[in-house]
Length: 472
Ligand code: SAM
Ligand code: SF4
Image (cartoon, rainbow, N blue to C red; front, side):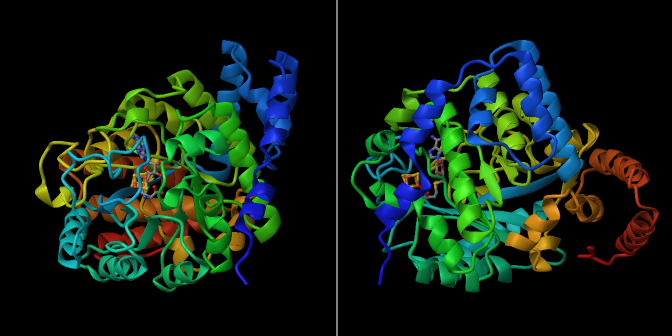
């Protein structure tokens, strides 16, 4: 019998409790901030109440301390690596009418398109030629055009598209909420993470932002992660579209959702994405953002998320400007998109226009993958295309068991180095190759375990000799 999803949704998000916590927490004294940060340092996450206290901080000094702790925790768990990916938009023909999105059905001026499988192949070849190994397939909702049969074939097409050393090793998917049976088919197609953003956890706001259409059902959308888990997809990715409602409410609700998943399925979210509303054509809530989040508050909420769910990857997209992205990396972001286009078919066109016709929203960061890699490696990060955990079955609970005590670093740093070396050998510009190999040498020297260092050096030698896809 089909579950009562409305009832389950009420178990997941208790709005009254969130409002009560927000109403009863004040701006904390510096000593109280220090106490909470000391707890966060144990890497066990934070309670809703402590999270609310940190979100109330406005004072520069206290904020700086929160940032410093977020940096420390990110390094303790993930080290210096930053995982890179690109979104692959397959369709903008949507039956929904979300008031913030240019793909909404009432936007008559958007050229509509759903890629066929040859076109998907062309897009993937273009992305592979730039050096990408991890993609996020993004689709609008349209049961006639982008239903489960289409998605499964699209996923198979992506994995089967190989050219020389180019291949996609992990494909994550961001597409509408589905039935358990449909999720099973995604699982069989070997997707990595299933991502779905709640947009807003606040029911009233959700209702206002989503005119009638399949996505208007708050409970069905919210419980998608339950069905994904029950279908065996144990890496799930959550997110809120910041700007729709009070960011403090949304962060607490995200945490409540994460705690629910951990309680029910023994595993919290694999990733949390932090999109902010960007300008979008004919989208009333993008033209007039109801609850704009300032850069300062945005940095605070990313840092607080890092402290509250230390074992969860935080994903930042090209929605943000380059300078701000660079700051956010230090505060806890562990995955970023680079060289992105948000219109179906836009990679192959190879234009410099970063918001070509049919785009979902305009991008804040216009740099190519190579430019992003050049900059982040100069900032002391290791760009990573690693997919080892997923391919070795280290997903869900197994991944969390490794991530929680910081053990993942032992695998992540060497694997990041190895995939970075592959990129440098096969795709990098001259200047990136030069700074990249120097960076690799430094990161290698700082690997604490001599055995691991020796093993990584050995594999690096093999990569220089032409072997590929080596990992620990
Ligand atoms: N159609 C599916 C859905 O809505 O869940 C998945 C694809 S949708 C294109 C992916 C995400 O884009 C949405 O979840 C939303 O958070 C984000 N988005 C929509 N409009 C946006 C805007 N104006 N600025 C930034 N992100 C936006
Ligand atoms: Fe469609 Fe998703 Fe955009 Fe809503 S957010 S209009 S469901 S593509």
